[in-house]
Image (tube, rainbow, N blue to C red; front, side):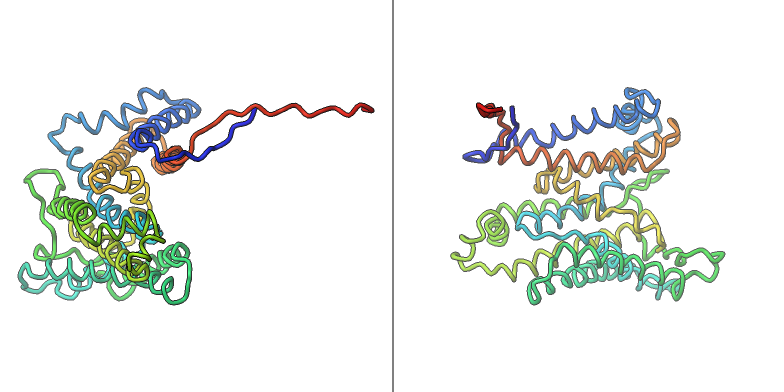
Length: 367
């Protein structure tokens, strides 16, 4: 008997819809087994991860935290989905996220302690998006003009951005009154994104910006010529060339938009929940957003729900660390397993598993 993957005559719509649900179910089973191996109750662990954050008795606190965590994930993932639909692979959204945070924070640092208006925040958001777009164009230009792999160049640029951020907050931008900690001074109220509600929650206006980005991306992909070009280049690049679409321009466009959204997410995260720039900004949102993009089927609406689900794992992981005494890194293990199952289940959209009987080998007469 032999298991083989056989290409389907056409893509399975049913499997495409069920694929993320199957991946989540398999991930829950696997993570339950891991909890049992380390001596924890799988049922209790899954309750802490997925039920407790949604039913917390403290009024809307953890629910707000889920939305706060989902905000950068969804925004970055929407930008990445534009690249992935066109078969262009931006793996460096984490670096673009950090550069956007640094570029937007520059104005907050320069105007700190001065009497300025709220125009500062608007310019900070523009600078963050612009910085992310420029940083995203670097691997795009290397691909277009030198044929370099955008996967490698975008990934390597993450380390440069990370080290650059570390140098800035430990050197020229370090708060002189910060007890020698690697951080800038706290942003002024005019340079900060305020919360939407009074109370202990941190829900801020950046979540509304993310919803607008999701809606605009959905309209662009479904209703505009650029959206049609992105989908056509990804599905049938030869037909796209015959239609006169320029793949090089598309590479530059998708990387610029993806970088801009990642950079915008970076400055929103800094000016919102964090309130200052420090090395902790490099929290891995850019890499986790890759899982969000694929789990959401590269669809902006699907990405919104996938981002909320991944944010739930972050909040649940923090709760499990406290109540179950398990390491917080287990959340990263959970997310890695989820990505593995998402990609594995996605292969069933194009291929089906067949069980073949292998013929027995003939035995020589003189044996």
